[in-house]
Amino acid sequence: MPPLNLPPVKEVAKIPGDWVEERSGLVSVSKYFLFRNVPRDISWLQTLGSALITVFIVQVTTGILLAMYYKPSTEEAFDSIRYITDEATLGWLVRGMHKWGSSVMVILLFLHMGRTFLFGAYKYPRELTWISGALIFILVMAMSFTGYLLVFDQRAYWATVVGVNINGTAPILGPFLSEFLKVGPEFTTETLTRFYALHMLVLPAAITGLIVLHNWLVVRLGVTSPPWSKHRATKGDV
Ligand code: HEM
Image (cartoon, rainbow, N blue to C red; front, side):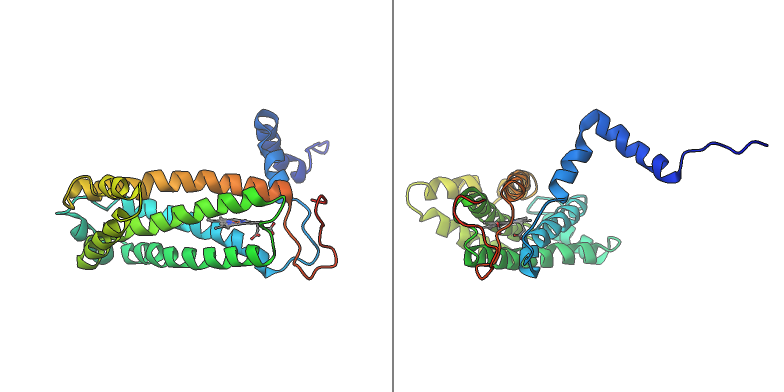
């Protein structure tokens, strides 16, 4: 029998990637994002941003799982949380990951901000990277605030009452913001539903968009060398 003239396995494995690339260019875009030059004296300090992306993905995934069981009404919210914790399969784990993940995200945000500040990475030409980061920071704080009420136990309720009242004392926009969050004079199911919509739709969508912009800028401008580096770029030398 004559030998079969098959292409090598390596060539066959490339076919799906080539198919996608030819139609969308997605492979080149991914390569542009993933394979790029970084300063030679880069360290673990420059991995905090990637750690933040990872925690954000964990938060979104566990949040979607929680949303499948959570009921945003004043009568049912607390019981649905109790059901998730005590009865749903691995619900305690998913809820625990979401709760602790939120604290990890805030801690990482401070560390990442501190690192970029101390390395002077907010200066020209990275001002927009810093501004987009600062906006993400505000939105992550809003995520913590809106998420806190959802458990709807005594602590969550009173902490949010205090938070909304403090917001209300801010000049000009304060009273509008407080009215918008409460949806009326009392905390009702409408209030809880509004917090839930902000927490699981509006804020994550805005944060996702800003993370894409932030990382587009990081890829475009490159990562800063440490201040003590001999290879540090000077102004005008991006
Ligand atoms: C969810 C939030 C955030 C994510 C996912 C994120 C992601 C990243 C990533 C992956 C990098 C490149 C690697 C690194 O330097 O660690 C980076 C760089 C940077 N980030 Fe963030 N970041 C976030 C929040 C922030 C905040 C709050 C600020 C400041 C207000 C900030 C300012 C910057 C700056 C200035 C750089 C450029 C650093 C350099 O060139 O060395 N980021 N970010």
